[in-house]
Picture 1 (cartoon, rainbow, N blue to C red):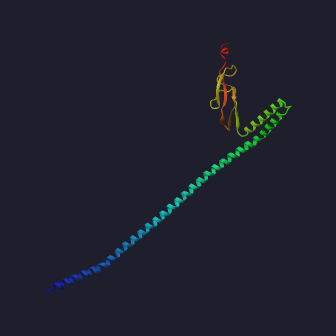
Picture 2: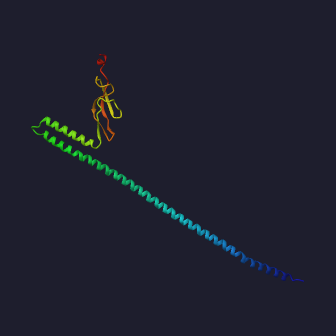
Picture 3: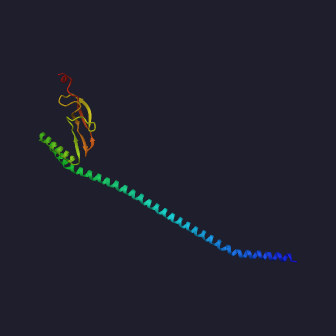
Length: 203
């Protein structure tokens, strides 16, 4: 007859042996999974670090681009200002001879024996000199006597009858207009012809 205690001891021993034999088989798989998890975590960390570095580099390039654009804008504004000042200085330099002659003419007009015709001739000379200097810089007179009215270049201030100038054509220029390199600076103020007077028209 088998002793129950002996049988239980054998069963317990067998179970322990089986567990002991099984444990070594489970450990390699568990260690491999942990290693893979560690490796994957390390890879993600590397990717995150690379992404952060790329983001920082992109932001740095953005800041440099913004700074370059602002510097370009400031340089462009400065160059435009310098060009404008240089252009103005050239115009003024060309006007200086006319200004000198005007001063000489004024001094001559103050003399006790000043001749009116000489003074008038001097003023006309200065005016021609001034117009020539301004024309060299693109200024052009708008003096449209006898021409059809052009609302883009002329400013009508009234009508007068005329038997010589057709109706709605420019009869008289009250104030000369000017354009600069084709761009209107000031329209010419003009009187337009209304055609022959009523009495002339009837006759």
